[in-house]
Image (tube, rainbow, N blue to C red; front, side, top):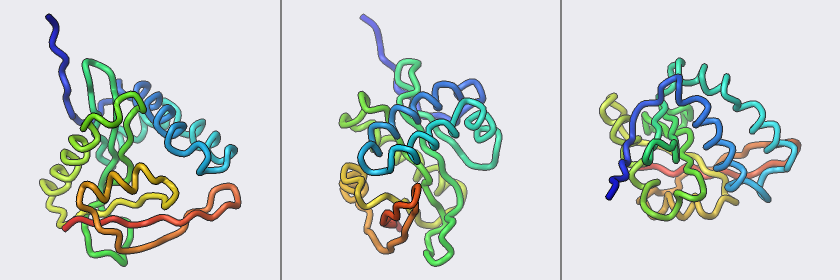
Length: 168
């Protein structure tokens, strides 16, 4: 009998290739049909292994969800970028490979990201989510998030609404 380990840890430079693959799989799954094809393709190409290697060495905290040696998901987090919102922490991204979704791993990664922000002294957390990304909207509502603000993001000439979910 073998044991499957599930670990959430800080990303290391050697994780860059696995995170890039997870990013590609998760974004392709989440945003196909929402983002214009060209914009999505450019984002996927830009976030290559070298981009992730630099990001891991940078000031943004990156957590990886490691399931049996596979990077199944990641979260990026830091200080809130929206000055109009009082929450001090922000989860910039939280993504899982499609085959790891729906079994509670996203909830675990989200909880760890919130705990890390709290341990850094951040009071409150904000997450922005595209309004057309219904699975993510449902996820953040299920986690107790309240949508309190709206914004817009433009991708290849197409403007999409995004919502800010907050936790105290």
